[in-house]
Amino acid sequence: MKATVFHEHGGPEVLGYEEVPTPTPGPDEALVRVHATTVNRGPDAKVREDGFGIPGFRLPHVSGADGAGEIVALGEGVTGRRVGERVAIYPLMWCGTCDFCRAGASENYCRAWRMMGMHVWGAHAEYVAMPARNLLPLPDAVSYAAAATLGVSYGTAHHGLLRQVRLQPSDTVLVMAAGSGIGAAAVQIARSVGARVLATSGAPWKRERALELGVAAAFDYRDPTWPEQVRAATDGRGADVVFDNVGAETWAQSLGCLDRGGRMLCSGNTGGWEVPLDLRGLYRNMVEIRFHMQGGMADMRALIDLIAAGEIDPVIDSSVPLSEAAAAQRRLAAQEQFGKVVLVPDSIGNAIAVAADEGRGRGQRRA
Image 1 (tube, rainbow, N blue to C red):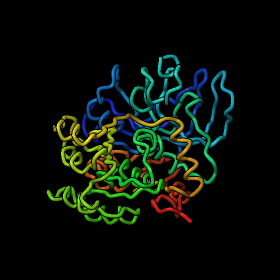
Image 2 (image 1 turned 45 degrees about the horizontal axis):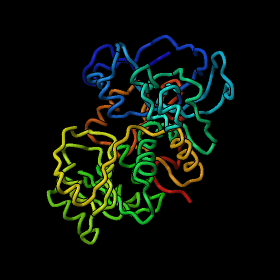
Image 3 (image 1 turned 180 degrees about the vertical axis):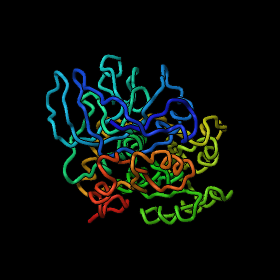
Image 4 (image 1 turned 120 degrees about the horizontal axis):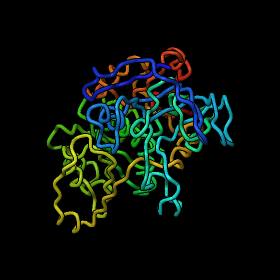
């Protein structure tokens, strides 16, 4: 099979489109022919750059933490799945035996978690083998491209907003970097709840796109007065929830945008991981800070239902052949995208993926 492979760490130029062995599904596994995958800053670009601190990471490597496709083979002992079934891949593998797993916690709490495209070869390939329990059936109303956005960005945003801070229709939520994959996801998920959404982005055209998604106001985070603008837009009170995965560049200002009793939510740190904190302001205003990694299978199931019902239409920036993955990663690094960049294996055909998603992937709620 063909896959995007790197044999050493470095920039996008280390990525090659090569022939590699097609995986064979082991016991309790299924082999999926990938129809769509995506590019992510952490699981893909950071792993390619320096290994992202993954224990036991080995080269060569195939990234790809998101994926959707069809089952083409089943390993020994697999039940409840069938060859030819359309599926979305939940990327995080859990042990089932640690204290969190035994207690029935969401899969992302597992102490021994591993992730497709990070700990093991991922979906930037024509085929990927995964535990059959990680596969979720896709109704015909959900395209492969839409399903491929769910594992990292949409699932993580859904888990954070609905399960961590329990977003309510009465809440005002501020989403930082709304043009990123997870930022656009957070905007849509918050809107689906009925919350009022404010957003930031550095590019004027991205702020315009955020307004098209239904945010009440969009601010330029490069303007030093943007926190005051957020305060003005909330009658001086501040937001009930701030969703900030930028980190060091924006956290001090983001915390200052919270209302009394507000909730800060973080699941990433694209702009640096060391942040200053004014503890007096936090405890005097009774601020809650919540962190999480990924979402659970329940989040992916809920999102598939929302897409099938027309409540959410994932924001797809572009659809690119897998052989051009390096160009896709450069686009992400330059922050030229709005939403998710989808990769389609060349053997599937990019034109097929676009045709299948005609009228979709624009991020607009359908009637």
